[in-house]
Length: 136
Image (cartoon, rainbow, N blue to C red):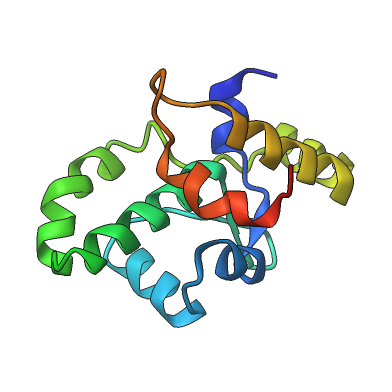
């Protein structure tokens, strides 16, 4: 399984995303309404978020804390999100993979994502936010 496919694979329900990002369900849905994140939907209409969605939500949170408003955030990250190359994947293959993953395997995937730095010597936003869930 490629790394890009794994980052875009729909894995996390909104409850887990809330815990990972410290955002409320309402905030997350608001960012979706404003086309800042694009979670996949199951046949039962449940939202499922990918690693990329969690990273985007953490970036939105960081920008809001710095005083940037939603319109500014849309201008900064909106064009990238609208390209849909980072859209969350929920097809037959990803659905089967998601159902096969145990909680332990999901935990391992998340930890693996935290260990991979985007740039040498720098810690990504997702690493800083999610590292509190893991002890060394």
